[in-house]
Amino acid sequence: MKYSYILLLLLVSSCYQIERNCLDYKTGSYKSTIVIDDVSYVSTFTRTEDLQIEIFENKTDSATVRWINDCEVVFKTINPKSMAEKKDIHLKILTTTDSTYTFEYSYVGETLKQKGIATKIE
Image 1 (cartoon, helix red, strand yellow):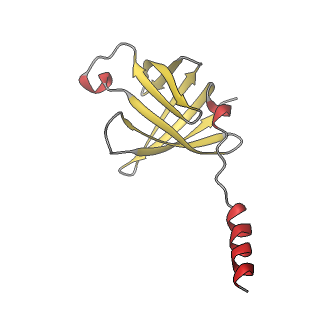
Image 2 (cartoon, rainbow, N blue to C red):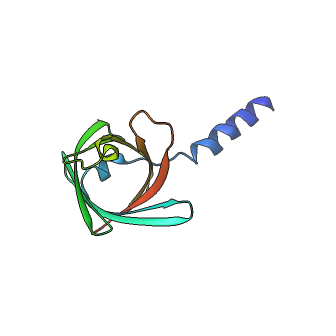
Image 3 (cartoon, rainbow, N blue to C red):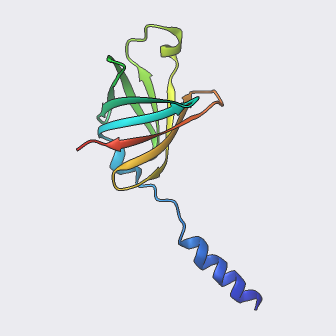
């Protein structure tokens, strides 16, 4: 009886593995939505192997892209105009679907993390 519970537990847990096909999202064009204090922020961006260009509130920012592994990347603003823009941003892809990925991000070295969803633009 004890072994049947263990087998059942293994079968159930294997059905609920989180999908992370991060390589599908290394490059492309996306729409990103982040909610902070019940306010939704939307931006669009295009990412190549080594560059990301983002449009947020009619302002364009460019950053270099450095992948740490298949699911984690660090962005460095190319022409920072403030102290905040001089800080690198660490982004980690948490889950993926066929057209979206859920991510968390923070300034490098800081513990406060925000979450968002990016949708691939065809």
